[in-house]
Image (cartoon, rainbow over all chains, first blue to last red; front, side, top):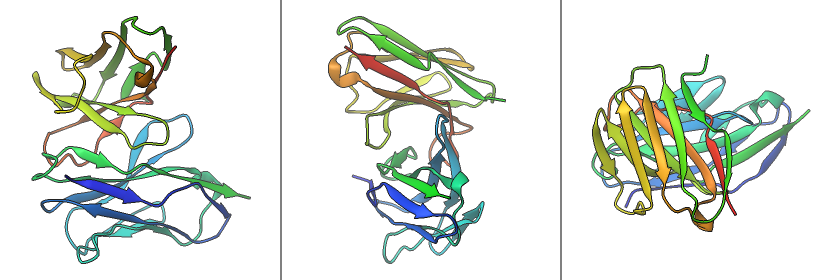
Length: 114
Length: 114
């Protein structure tokens, strides 16, 4: 079945450091890919998405490119801030496999120190 | 303003004592979802409603039931909670089903079964 694998956390960085959180997926069809973020004490919210191969999603300085050849959707940011501390979830929605429902990775906790 | 509201935020119950978690939305979305998220695991879809049509995931235990009396409200009933049901329960909505796209999440209800 469809699945998402993302790097284990926690990830601890200093402010202004570069961030990469790896995400790979397995899907039967042609999924849409998402990054959701969960700030402390809040619900999950969509950070960015890409719906087809080679699309790049971007928001709040974060980027991720849909790479079909490597089945990856790695999250990147050039300079993190303390306010980026949160748990980040990679997810896919595959009309064929998951009937369009979101399938999540386990989440990666990011802590950014001043 | 919160658009998906879950109550209660925290619930402690005893083994076997029924629990109901509620979710309300002001988005007028057609689809409502319930996810279960255990510690350090990915959110797992339990079921969803497309309007009044109920869709149960194949591996959702019979112990879990849901009701959607109207567009705005959805309830998760756990008839006889076991220790393994301790988890965060997430409610989410989307405008349409299939190829879900953006889901709007509540802050979650954290259930502890003693």
